[in-house]
Image (tube, rainbow, N blue to C red; front, side, top):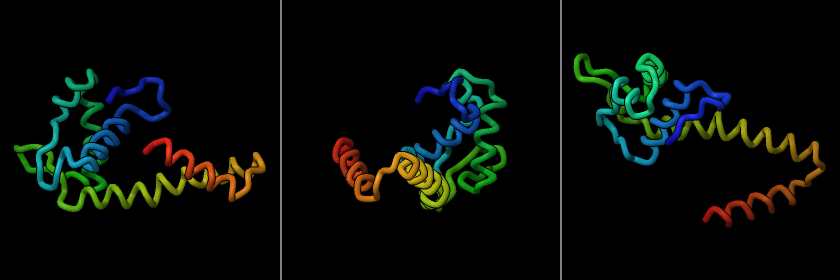
Amino acid sequence: MILSNDSSKPIYVQIAEWLENEIIAERFTANEKVYSQYQLAELFNINPATAAKGLTILVEEMTLYKKRGLGMFVAPEAKMMILEKRRNETLTKMVTDIVLEAKRLSVTKAELIQLIHKCEEEIE
């Protein structure tokens, strides 16, 4: 993953999302150690404090947990929690934005569904 300095999302949020994506893809599994702030800083060529902020987000959301002196580990229910959060927050916001834009453009529900099916076919 390449972090974007031009993104509207702060780099530490991009780090947190990247780690979430790694957990969803099962490149990090339950109770497995994740990269330290220094490893993330080296990997993405960023300040360790920025990487630490991204890790802190995931600790606060209970996606990661700390083991004193050992580092950060993936919480047992992390993948399920991330999927739930993204369905309830991220996906809902995206769909709301799409529906609002479709209304502004006078796109019918049938046309919108057809467009979704077309995009889905292109992805597969």
